[in-house]
Image (cartoon, rainbow, N blue to C red; front, top):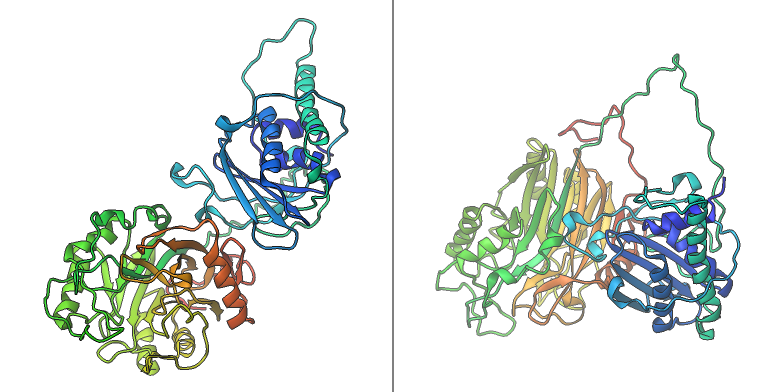
Length: 574
């Protein structure tokens, strides 16, 4: 049974994005324009695609005119995007407050015909805790395409309305809904500038639509009659998982050799704090020291030699935004000798977090019923060395005896804005052996590690799914207050989200794009620049990896892994 015009209109009035897209497409399809819409909380996203560049002001005028007539329930903000057919990224994006910017005039109504229902992808992400009123990269997810049959339209009862004498309530609804729809059609046919007449299609946020033309709603499936002789279905136990978030290099300012500390340390992560939430464990690489020790290990009078020292109380900055574990196995761990290293570990522990990176150290953290083991590696003697694969594998096997999931952190690889490529060979930086990170990472997985988190190059690098385990070869810079260059790729950052089951198998995840300002302070990147970079690098460096990276950062294994009654219990590797 096909959805009627009134049903579609009613669903659109309730803020249903699929229905809204259907109404807009009714007008724009004759002009060659394809529209898709989806909703995130109170924000409606509308996307347009064309073979020629779309004029944003004219498109905005048309969309706003129709939305004012429709007045969809609960939609306060609109984000409108325009993109060329075949391109991956929008040419432009317009964001506005719907209630305060809409035009006030209303066009007359004309006649129209029945509207088919368009098959579009719908995203299921929900704004967490009402923090964000607009759609952001952190809210983008993946979901399959669904259809909008008449029976699936969300019909929400409206408040009681007095009914005029001798007038049927259904006729009032029919007349009002149809007039508003037809007014929108009249507007695009008579008011929308002729310059838009050549504009064709626009694709979806998360996946390509199966068709560029509207599709009728499917026939309703017959209702099955319960049979008392049929045994009850077997209940499949829910798959137990753990969600981790990880970021790269962090330096919250330094007091050596000159004072470069923020006036308000708590402001450093304020803009990005909401997107660090929602994980069972939050990890980062702390690339400084937390000490007052006055004597550096390095001779910083030489070129390209840096020593970082931050006040011990700065550990609270990271605990306050949700960090659980900080890696301190890196090339700045011993900037202030053994004393500075031990002070750093102590400051992190006293702030209520775990420090990982001491030689032969394994840190255990239990979250959501799953025990994780953490081991930190770097490239220097006195630490767990990336170059010593046999010793690393022995640590992984030891950790597996007491943990369900083993996470490896490594600080290795060449550095710099152009160090984005990942090769299966030893990398050097100023003649220094920085390890073969591909060989190391795969060897750790072969020994039983489940997640590999790389950092050190100061730029994002490719991702790889190896034997069902996720490898992030570099998480880039995340915080470098007046300490790091943020030019080009050095300013592209991310929050990596990874969901693992109780055996360590990668279930899914997300790359949340971040950018650093000129002072090295992180904020969300609504242009998804890091996602685009990582997608391209992954396709170039690991073309055979089965990992799928969506255009908005969604990470997916080759096939959804269905839980089964015989799934391994926590601690049991497949």
